[in-house]
Length: 206
Image (tube, rainbow, N blue to C red):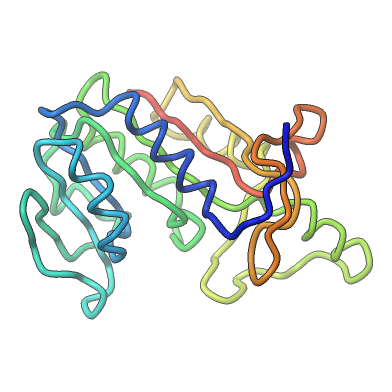
């Protein structure tokens, strides 16, 4: 395990690597929170078609190549995406912004094909730096900035266990300082410190 000194978004890189394990040239992919064209392009070049869903009108890009953008809310996904039509769904740093996260997961379940996969990443509410700060200041109160909430690993498990998803995997990512102007971290979080990981990657299987 080595320490990395750069500002790469390793949580996105890991999500992309996971995505590549499941995607193929015939895949229909859904990206929730699709306002970053560069990231969308990284996804779209591996699949047949990508549907990007964006809730904020001014952030919705124009369609291009095999990418079609829809204006809509993750919590109302079945109103704009056909049931059992998606092979792979991606949501990078979105679920912490969603008011009804359980409804969002169940809507996602409905649009996935049987055998479909959803890959979600989100910050850990008790990541090392945040836990250190809160030792002195007390816990951050939510909503905070744009985040309705953040999760611990146990809170993620509790949420999924209430949802329609029965099979899942949670991967802890990054340990250290990863954000702002300082990036000093282990890419892979040691197992003994997973509750202090910076991010969690959630893999959901229908």
